[in-house]
Length: 97
Image (cartoon, rainbow, N blue to C red):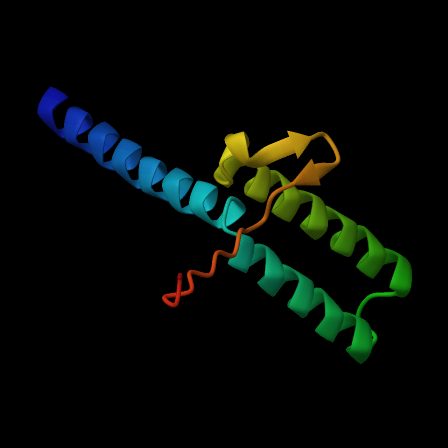
């Protein structure tokens, strides 16, 4: 009986760990956030939600995307609190005399 209980508990723990991992991945994926925004926009256009509800969802999505980018972008690229280096373009001319 103890063996069956142990197997059942281990199985439930495994499933809950997988669900937690998937939920974390979706929460931290900017593409998932964009899909949420698109879905909300479709609901707004169809009349399922009003402009105030859409504005709340939109603000939440943009905040989450900012948080995700802040965690995933290299922190050494920050110039100051208001400016960030997004990219650098370098061109090399082969005709150097």
